[in-house]
Amino acid sequence: MSKHSKWSKVKRIKEVLDVKKGAAFSKAVKGIQMAARQGGADPETNFRLRLAIEKAHEVNMPHDNIERAIKKASGAEGEGIALSEVLYEGYGSGGAAFLVSTITDNRTRTVGEIRHLFEEHGGHLAESGAVAYLFTHVGLLQFAIPKESSDTVTLMAIDAGAIDIEYEAGVLSVYTNPTALSAVASQLKTQGGLTPKSQELTYLAHNQITVDEATRTKIETLLSALSDHDDVDEVYTNVSFP
Image 1 (tube, one colour):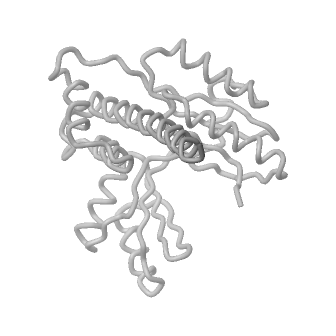
Image 2 (cartoon, helix red, strand yellow):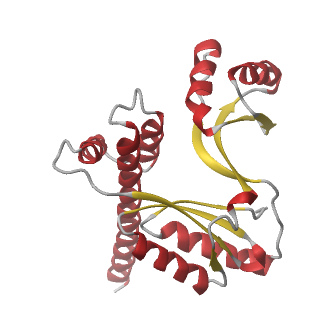
């Protein structure tokens, strides 16, 4: 009996992991298709597509799946699909601000489901512009840099066009204008031989807020629910997590 019970538990865990893997693949495919539609199917000339492919690699998506997603988006395998990017704004418990970046083929369905998630977890969807002004859209490059080299790399990053730089715990974060992310990354690699350990387009809160533990738990639950939604690409908040 114990053996059967253990197998049942393992099987359930595998089923959960398979579902999460499938959802991660689905999100990665949408990101690739959106990037390919907007900037073309060549990752050498489409920096956003390169970022989307990197995200697909992070969830261990097979190369064939990536190639198929690009071809489908570009129309090489039949008609291209109709996807839209929509940025939703909302508030959670304790006045926490949220930006929810989505990629969807049905705006009506997505907005209804996102609204429901906010309301289910003590928040509400806001009008366009009500939250976005609390954030800045930036490019972010992060490098593992020894402290003795941080000043040299900082000067290089400034020359390359960085708009802000932070150094903490051996990691140098270089912030750029969204459209300059590719150029700054390329210049740092060409001139300094520097390859970022991560690079992304993100939203940074101008000021972070702190909340009590009970409120933080509610916010984390809402974050998790939003992140698990099939159409949600990224979720940003102005809450400071310890």
